[in-house]
Image (cartoon, rainbow, N blue to C red; front, top):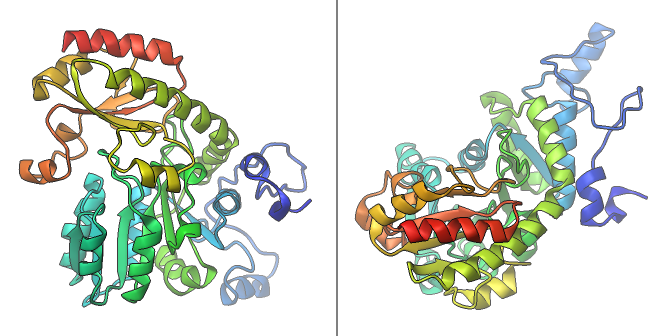
Length: 393
């Protein structure tokens, strides 16, 4: 059978594998910076015809290529390029495509580093940027009533779990002459496939669910072969945000269990969210799988499950939230997410601390908010831990 005939669960463990002459079972780690040629003419040909042979691991590497191909098959994209981190992927995707005088429109609900790229770095290069309330289609219509080169969104926002109507925003983006770039890290390639909804470019921090065990940095950009060839390939070749072959190998290992982990973690997250919603010390819970989520209908239409992340606000503000965090015994305080271990962070003082208080308030990030990434522990142990911590709050 060819990779194109296999189902996603099989592709996650087998897709894109290329064995060497040694016939290894697990993918090989090609830890090499360069490559050798038998003849000078072979080297000449390798440089004259990019892609015909491996030249330098800043450009391409066999282990990295296997990771790229596996993720490409799972996502259903024409092309994929691996990068050193998720933020390298976000920046490269935009920087390779927009230039001075272009216009970028983005959802205002963004991870702190994404917000910095949109609001600080791109304008410094002469790119006009505008942020809108991503939940408001009227705001999108107004912003995209004039030309835009690119639109950037998080399919599910970090940390308040706002959901973008990808299909509607894609239509508006294309009408404005632009391409839609979607950071799909919260949803993973299993719970949402933005390309099927009209998105043009999909971006991942593979550090999160794809590795899923707190070991490796990595990122990925997926899109059409033409866009990668015309815009991304040379940008990566000459700027060097390369994915380490060893990290690519770790990400390949992570993908083998991605489906199992996301399914189990999402099931547990639904139980934990329901528990939190019933706690008197909790002011609100934001989880796409709950009937109380403000965009529940969109979530049900666009997502294949509620996901592994939620946010909840503890009554009493920052002091109460800190008492809660400090009382946890099982759940760990960390700004990472998508891990096999359950992790919590306080967005107002960590991932979004650079925002002004009024900016955080506009995004629904109050001082009592805690973001929770549910791991593989027994959900009863997680609720026991949260119950004790909330009592301390």
